[in-house]
Image (cartoon, rainbow, N blue to C red; front, side):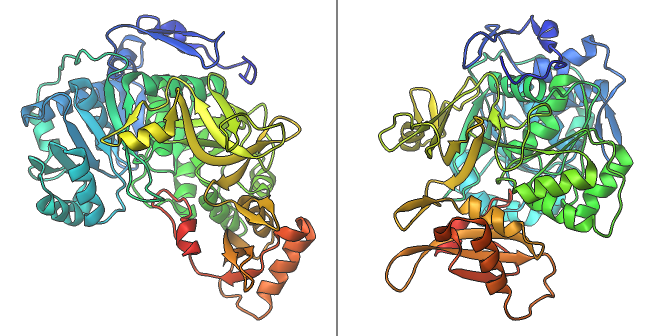
Length: 537
């Protein structure tokens, strides 16, 4: 398969008791054992491969070895079963980035219980919806999130049988201390439901995305190993949090698949926090998002942290503007490898790689996945034309929980219809244009908000930008820009005109924004995606 780094380790040799991979097919074909509970390969096998004493997790407070991790996962699974939570039941998690998050996820999976990590920044109304939608048996929370979780549980119908803290008095941690350190793995199959990840809900209520046991193994092998060349010798730090699919893969699936080390921080992902973590723990692989990279780059003008340990820097969530790619490369000597993924695929499926990267695009298809750009008729578009991105691969979700209509609309003949608009440039790289409902026709020509936003961010005054469609006085659609300044104290007159002229100088004449608003913040989901529909309204 093209695009695989020559030095990518082939760890499948160590996993043949569970699965094999046929790389001659696209999508790649994995063959799993009839009985496959993924906790066996992500947790248990490391004890048989000589990693018992190696650090699996590092935090400011403690290091957790692979032996300690395996024992605590077993104790956690026994504690959950001891509460009367049955295999197949849902366990909601409102838990910060800490070792307990990992114990809960894998303890549940090993016991046959389905973990459902939730965004820790939501309201009691949001949690009530997810409690009722999932029909969960229990919800576990970090103590700092007690108020919204407990309030939501009291209002829910039906109520979960257990609402319990992860740590502290009368907590899961206390139950773990009293639980047995051995746990028989639940006899799941590779296609059995394993875990859920709720979609971000940027266009409505979030949807329960149901992943099977095989899915985590597939994305870890195809992206982390095959595409990125990450190895067990790497130390991995994700500023993106564990509760959504990007961070879930970065900080938990990839290190535990490879036998590497994951660095966790429960603090908000500010430039200061990331610099401190990088200098203290010396990660070799770093995962961020464009908004954070922009703030880090601005902070580097004054701060001089030692970022030399990082050999791979990865971005997703929003398209990475070329100015950020170029600025980070200049400051650190390491390129940011941008990619695009989805909760439904479980992680990134188009990406730049260490051996093949460039500014301004999402890169190429991760070997093992298949993509297609489709027109309104569902057929592939011609080369260079914009189409709706479809993805096919063995980690693609089979269904949304209790939502057959959305399932039927989004997953057709094994193809996930993502709603992202892209085209391939003359070099075969995929260029992101925006969501299908964000695209606009200006003067009868399709116009990408991502392209205009990238041009705005090139200006030294601009930190972030979001562009949406707006009707002018004649009812014609034109671009409208909302901009956050790098230095918000600069509010002199004429900034809008300066930025308008900057766009005119670098874009086709019809693409420049007719209105430029200087704002202090942009509406976003808690995963950092801009909610452009709020700007349109």
